[in-house]
Image (cartoon, rainbow, N blue to C red; front, side, top):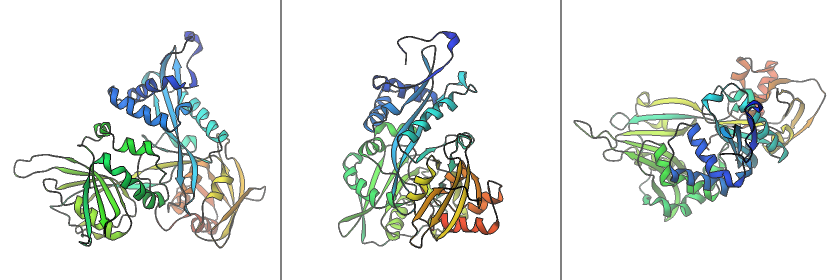
Length: 419
């Protein structure tokens, strides 16, 4: 990516938005930044997605002597928040800095341009998947959803099946979108932390280039039907391994959606019992997944807890009034924000029906917390008390209890897919 008039060597890197005709090269630079090899098909696929989402003017680069040395992009997302409303969110993505230009403040400059733009566009939230968890807290993002990475073998673990009346139908990915998209809207999109998928997102999911990032085979789709109506699906990939004495392949679950637990059990039993594939890996399993209680020998299920979606609040009033709360009450929050977007005190009053009203105030604070901690608790993950014990949220024990009662949700928030 080059500019028409390269700056002089003395001027240093320049941070700017990307022009529409630079999009393909932008994607190439992102791949380079993440250590991927250049592939024309994958670059074109990702560029088409970015362009279709209207994200072209939201791409940012840092240039040094006319060469791109850092990148950042934003997707327009609609994030599901407690209560079921969807909030306009800047999806922070494609963040790279060339190794030659680390520790020079380029990420700080790009992030400022990105968050300023999101605020000016009226987006109360920004959110991201973090490649490294130590980076984004200093920009006001907090880990708001968590998941399990699971691995087990059906030689060691047995899972229950669902009713036989639920039939399983294999579909080709390119013929399945019309079935998958409505089911996603009914299931995962109702889960707090998920975001609405526009058509280009589905194109990305079923793209043949996506398999190159997984280490496994092509995408496979199985839809569950009850009385002829779709009630769930599983997306998975297979990797065949031929051991000396028996097959040792792996079924990698990419995503599962279901209308009820009978469907979930049926789909889980299916992927756990595929011939030649004794090993099962779940990329993202919900933090409150019943599988860990239903399976025999749960100790044999290898599990790793990982953060998923990180949330950054940019407009406290709009964000807090957009979600619903588990119990009524009132609190004054004193929010600290080194970047200035949310600094101030805010009174939150929650009514019996869970609706909240929020406004700036000069009243004495009940709870003190940084913007990152506000983002961490915003979607309802049950760790208010843990953050308080870690010295990240401050207040009297009774007000910490009230904060937890108001903010934490019965079901753990979950984000099905990285972006």
